[in-house]
Each structure stands twice: as structure tokens, then as C-alpha cells.
Amino acid sequence: MDFGRLKDISGVDFSLPEEDPYSQMVLRNHPNFVGNFDFRLGAPAWSCTEWKGKIYPDKSSPSTFLHHYAQHFDTIELNSTHYGIPQSATILKWKSSVGDYFRFCPKMLQSVSHRKRLNNVQSDVDEFTDQMRLFEHKLGYTWLQMPPDFDIQERKSLFTFLEKYPSDIPLALELRHDSWFKDQAVLNDLSEIMTERSQAMIITDVAGRRDVLHMRVTTPVILIRFVGNELSPTDFSRVDLWLKRIDRFKQQGLQEVYFFAHQPEDILCPEIGNHIGKKSENDYNWKFTYPILREKAEQRALF
Image (cartoon, rainbow, N blue to C red; front, side):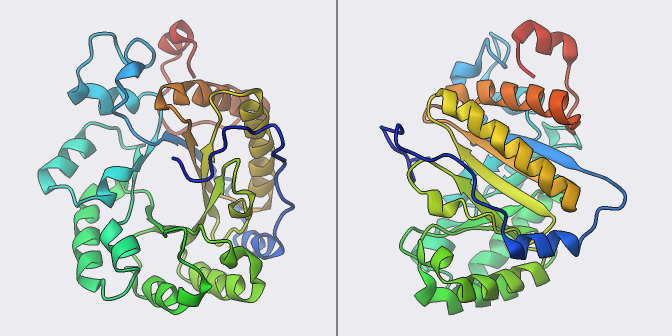
């Protein structure tokens, strides 16, 4: 992910913002009396050939990468759906390659978000969501990423889109224009629509755009897109801050987290995953939903 990346991060304040009062209200209204909590960890793709010998077997073929990916991660940012809707046979093959614990998070078509900018998109959305239903219980959140120049002047299009989006298909939203985080009245109007429809706001943590680290929570489920800096020491300290904040949210009522670890080079994602896995289990006793193979994990020093 190139959005918000910086070559020089020496002057960046990587601290997390204070908790958002609206978010605190949302979590208070969804108390987790049962105590169920799922921490899902994923990467941007499963096609990284450099993971052979790291988390994939040395002689594995690309056709088996997803199967091996799902032994270490339990969710995926499915970016390929941004460029076209997969055939039914492809979706069924993907679904059969992973266990029941796994969740696919498909990205909305760029024709909807970027070319048509949410206007006159009903047929596109219907075609997209009809295919995504083939994932059945392995469908996580579909996610809508708006272009950087999509600002609050286009809020009517966004509000209408959210209100019409199928209620049986979970939706998360990533906004990138700073106007959404400067106008509290508009942000609150947007949040109320999303809370009413159980739609999640994506929180993006990237060096060059600290405004999109907004801490606005609209459901008891949050999605975090974490962009590291080639395993800089700050990557690990930032993750530690996030785990502490997530634990705080959990105490308030948070029920599920999707944490997507990005690096400038995908080859480095497992190292961040390793740190998250060990830290979250050792310090917070969070159990992942996927079946960790301890013996292999110890041999590979991963998870």
C-alpha cells in the first residue's frame, strides 16, 4: 500500500490518538457479557513466492499457497475483487482451500468506488454482493475504499450508498480525504448511519497520514490496516501500542478485530505476524481462531 508512506519516518509521532467519545458510547451499547473475542490476523495477499521456505513449504506451488497461508493467518484482504468479480468456480476453490475459521474480506469494485463514485451503481453492487454470498460463513467484511479526493461534499452519495447496501453482507469503509475527520458534525452523521446498519469504519495506521488514524468505532467489530516500515523498531512498538488499545476496547465491549499487516515488501509480513501472535497470546492471552501447529511454528519461529 503506497498511500501515506514516507521514506523518512524520523519525525513521525506514532502515538495513538485518545479514545473517541462516540466509540466509547458504541461499545457501551454492545456489552460483551459472554466474553467472546476473536482476534483475526491477515496480510494483503497470499501470492508472495518469497514466503516459500518461510511459511510455505520449499517445494509448494502457487496453487497451494492459499492453503498454506491459512495455516498462519485467518483472514485476507482480497484486493483482486477491486478489479473484477471472480468466477463462481474460483470463489468455490478459494473457499475449499481454507478451514471454517477463515474469513475472506473482498474489496469493492473500483468501478463503484472510483469510476462512478457511488452514483448509479446498484447493478454493479448487486452483481458483486451476489457473488460474495458464495463465500457463505467464510465471508468476513466486504470493504469500500474511497479515493483520496472523495470529500464531504460528496457525502450524500456515500450516505445513500450505505443505506442501500445489502444488510446481510457486512461492510467496512475506508475514507482518505482529511475533510471527513475535520468536520465532527458530518462524521457523526456518517457514524450514526453506519452504527444503525452495523457497518464498520476502517482505521488506517500509516506514517504519512496520521489523520486517518481516527479511532472512530461504529460497531463492536473493528478493522485495522497497519502499514509498517520495513521492520523498523517503530513497527514493533506501534504494534504493542495497538494491542494495548485493543485490550482496552475489549474491556469496553469489543467483540472482534481484523488486523491486516502491511509492509512495503510483502515478504516481511510474517515477521510482524510473528510478533503480534506471540505478544497477544503471552501478554493478553488472546487465542486465535485458526489451528496453530505448535511444532511447525517453533521450527519456523513463526506464530
